[in-house]
Image (tube, rainbow, N blue to C red):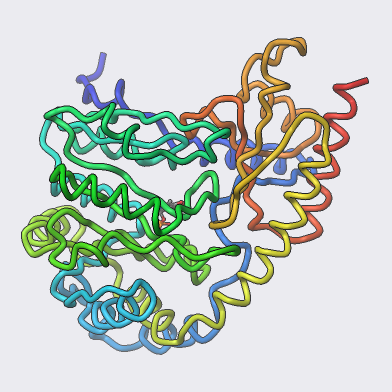
Length: 398
Ligand code: PLP
């Protein structure tokens, strides 16, 4: 018998979105033509000008060495400039820590503000990493249920009902992964006031800020909290610039939080790869043209997919105006009326095994009865995959 591993093993789950991508990959390796709606990343390559800047930087010996743990000065200056331009609040470069993707930014932010047993309000459906990183940081996720009927949105009275003297942080993600829901300015302002008055942190995940197709984007809580007394913003280049593999994100917070985040970063990883940081700096300094081109393609696919899905019997999607996800209501097919299908997990397995279409089941996001579709795939694949879904459901109805 080997020595014992940490109890964390009983507490945290592997990424639900990665599980379905792996299964789809296995089927492809067996020669099956799988359409995967699982991807949480743009299907476009990183723009060539970014790659060229990195090629040049790779031959400069200065980039072969350690650099400051908080991030390269040039990148932090660009983050500060673009935050003001796009997110409409000011941040000094010294209040930024560059991390290995938005994912590490979230974990480091939690490690910086949570103590053991602190409660974190996690609105459902949630991005699959949130509760697990709360647990890694020693906190307790407290789930806030929302319903499709309420547009997957929560209000201050929902928050009040969950608040205890241990509530430390609220997770905020608008546009949302997995629903694509975007809160209005008025809705957001009420929630921010509640958090500020309750002296609770808001961790605002703004990775999808550039991907809103209808109406206005949600204003950042940092606009209303210029000293960042209750606000931590997480952002990154993964989604907006097709740079998921480069692994660059960042935390914006007050000096106390940033001081601790820097300590954690310096002990955990030191600096993010210099070349990746240079790639991110190139992305930010070259503007949003490339993002806006991707956005046109995403919006075309979004409109196509919503129309197609809503024409299929007893499934539906609504209110999805941001990010690149649709959260499809498949409750009619998960209630045991079909042999062997008792959950959205079963339904997604059935679709993958029989029709070779991969969706992420709602269980991965704390919302059984639904499944997530990513429309970050080619128009042809989208059409092919949704035709297969249509056929699957027709077959079930005969
Ligand atoms: N936040 C949300 C809502 C996401 O969907 C993702 C990725 O899927 C991330 C953060 C993390 O992005 P990354 O670590 O690739 O920068």
